[in-house]
Image (cartoon, rainbow, N blue to C red; front, top):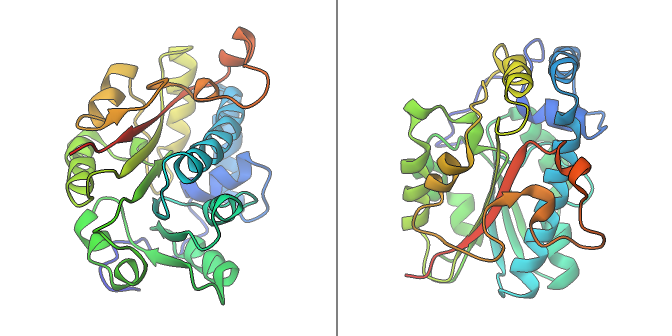
Length: 269
């Protein structure tokens, strides 16, 4: 285990959110326990698969915005998950070759897959660590190898903060990360919610109770509180497909299937 990590041991008998997310997206890097948990979630709320896909698309749009319009050339992606098409470094490189990316995840299996994918890449690193220990992430030597904290950073917390309980103080953790970044840095955040079809969403969330991390769904207002201190860029904190859509805007029926909000904020000072 790497220095500073607070990671779970490899255990394929227990579902892990990163591998469940891979299953939602149709990936193959998941195990029987993950697939059974996904089936339980989707029985309660089939919209979760649509939300996962919308979340992946939101990530791509946000990274393209940060590289192409905001000029960001270095990223810390916490809770990266199993590598899949459209990884952050791939999307960023299409707009600016050499953009630096440090991936962080607490699942040793994710770490192994990412290490295999990133072999030979000088502009990427993978760190085995946990969002619950932001100091370990910020002080990790692999982070220091690539990230210049004197220049703006793109901090990606995509579909990860909802795995923090209220007792684990997500507002404080995000604030600590924010305070380590210089002015001009950006935060990309997405988060699950029960604002739509509340009972079904809560039943679906119960499918994570036996996984390595339970999920805490939050309202728009409570997610907005996590973004305190960040100056939101237009259109603010919105349902995932509504954040700077590319192509045809989502129709109301499509939006009803998306149980997540996303937003991008800038640290102005």
